[in-house]
Amino acid sequence: MIDAFAEVTLDRQFIHVDPARAARTPFGGTVAHGFLTLSLLSAMADDALPERKDGVGVNYGFDRVRFSSPVKAGSRLRGRFSVIERTPRGPGETRTRLAVSVEIDGAPKPALVAEWLTLSILASGE
Image 1 (spheres, rainbow, N blue to C red):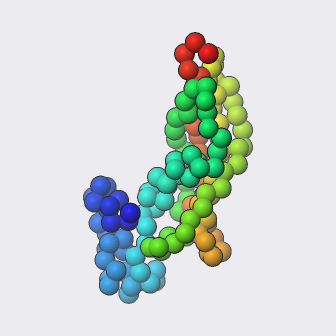
Image 2 (image 1 turned 60 degrees about the horizontal axis):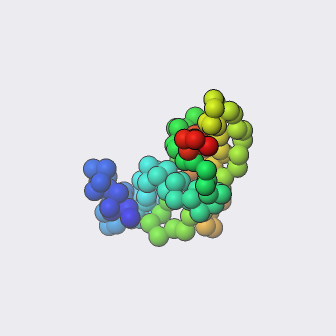
């Protein structure tokens, strides 16, 4: 996944794709791109949050993102999501602010902490 992300984003920095060189860094091996970790939030949310059956949820952005610990290649990750607030924005539309973290199995600090904004939009006619 790390190598594929490097190719798609053209971010082929050696700490991501060259195990021999990365082994000589403080990371001790290759690490995932921070933006790869961030991009996994959608899949993690799909597994963790209730499915919307009456409309669609869309990414609205982030108010805060921090990459607080490197994700070594082969690490197991889990996402945690907590609703901070829900704000109606108009007929059939709600903005949700989520506190999110991506935890690395066995690590003392999360890989990522963020405040993620999403919009829920009811399907037309509902």
